[in-house]
Amino acid sequence: MTQPPEPSVAVELEKLRGTMAEGFARVDGALALLVQRSDQTDRQLADHEQRLDAVERSRWPLPSIAALVAVASLLLALWQASPAH
Image (cartoon, rainbow, N blue to C red):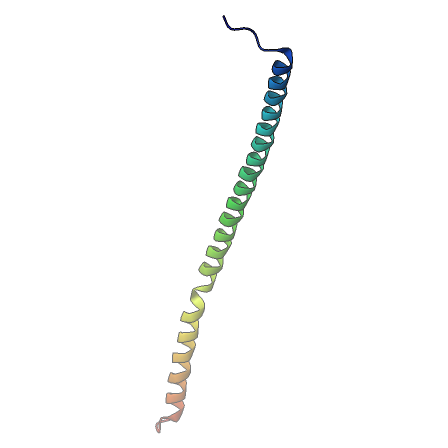
């Protein structure tokens, strides 16, 4: 039959179990912190994406307006330069 381990071995195994549990708790805490930071980064990226989309939507008419002003200026210059005027 197998004899029970000596008390010192049992104590050391219990210490090892406690050390492992403490290590796993620290790793779990660090992973939870990383997940939280990742979630915050995802929210920031989504916010930046929304803001960038809003800027792009509000900016799109500017080139069109510039082209219309240029065409109007060209037509006005041609009208003033025409001999009939």
